[in-house]
Amino acid sequence: MANLRDVRLRMRAIAQTLQVTKAMKLISTSKLRKGRLLLEDTEPYFNRIQRTMSDILQDTGSVQSPYLKKVANGRTAVIVVTSDKGLAGGYNANIFRFVQSICENLKNPILILIGQVGQRYFVNSPYLVLENFTFNSRIPTVEDAQDLADYVVSQFDWGVFAEVRVVYTHMYNALKLVPTEREVLPLDETKITAAVRPELAGQKVKDEHFEYLPSPEAVFDTLAPLYIKGVIYGCLVEAYASEQSARMSAMDEASKNGEEMLASQQLSYNRVRQAGITQEVTEIVSGAIALSD
Image (cartoon, rainbow, N blue to C red; front, side, top):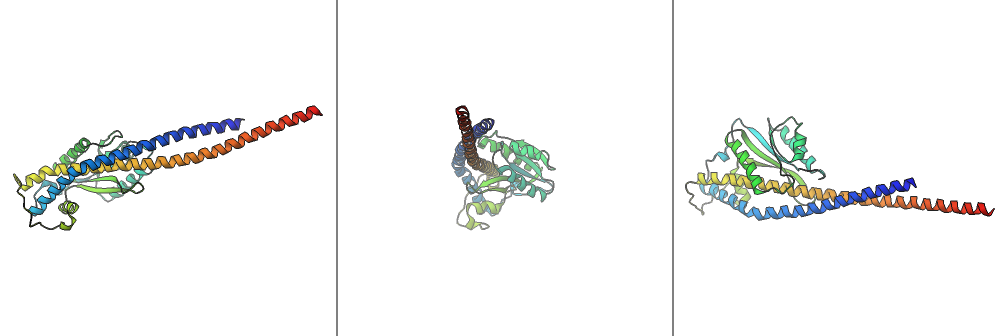
């Protein structure tokens, strides 16, 4: 009967683990929906800023802005977006490999880390970690993006950064999560225009003329930090949604494996229990035969 007791303990442990994995799957599903809705609600605002910047570039032909110039003798800052918790499958591991491949092709890169998992991993890396940010596993807000944007813009203005890139996970669908790199600074005129109106990329609009006060450069320099904040915010929310999707898939797979293990243990339990009953019946019958003899 000792084997029967061991099987019961294993079944109880698997059942308790199943409760955790199923609960985490439901929580990740809810967070994924909230993150996508939040991004959809704020996208029109930042898209309008990008459209205005594109109009300035198209209308004036060229704008003299410090945000469009690459700083000489600066270093490349790489913003790495990871999660604050594990149990998300290969979500963080894919980001780590992608960042390693990028940094190998850069000269003296500087890392700006978002997420506790990334902080624990890159603390032993050969690359300089300049700053750490964490959101404590909550949905990133516009204020969080504002803090990060203010930091990188100030460093860029002072000439510390020659360029700024952000590495995050883009979610094409629930099954396709791809680490992605996006250049934040310096701004690229062609990319800004192409993102709004691809058919007019690199061309000057002749039938649209706007008056910008006090000047097109002043308006552009005012909008640029807001645009950068929008880019960073979009990357943060996209990474958050990708993390929840990865965790949801990982917990779903763990639940399926747990159910298979529980079914296997149930079969073993039935076999051990049946063997015990058979042995008891055999002992009773043998005892009865002995007494009758």
